[in-house]
Length: 273
Image 1: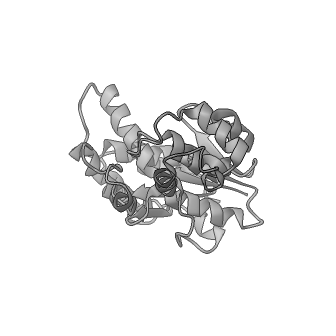
Image 2: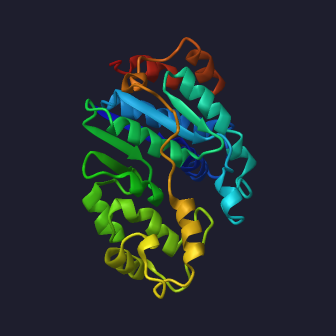
């Protein structure tokens, strides 16, 4: 079987700003939520039988204690923040497993879900739907892959090596050296992607670098800690918990609340595995 793990936070941002451009600046109260639900339904209509969605129930996480410049909710529009919790509630009502993260982040949930799924022999492929580059560390050959809907690309381990120049397991070290502006840490001054890939392919993980190669070793290791996704979130025990069995009776009320009756029609007509 194939299992699919969706980055709900990314999808919410994508639909929020996409709808605002389409609607010429007008913001429907739950427009982004409805957009994410339609995306999930499209996946189900195309054959997805087992899936789960991870969200950032709060933007801040334990990483904010590790680095003061790490991303926060500051600057995120209130109208967008107001749709996070309704999205989680609507997904649950639609019968889709949803993991609202607080101390950890949605990315950690995706990494944890991929680890649990990959340990099940029944799973032929686990697909992580997000363009976030830190999720590339979860890719395992062609069994755990990263799907970039925006670029219409599927990254196997070979694809990750082609994009970053290093194996997936070295992505935390790579990001520690070059930084990640989206997450709010700058990397090591003077080290760009090509230099980082060359050093990592020569010496391996940052801990193995000779002392004279990296002056800011302690800082690099702190950034590596930020970039390393946690994989021990207890999200589910059995892959069958991810099987979509149709919407719950509560979903009709949510579709009405979202102002999109087509959601219910589409949901009731989607194939149940």
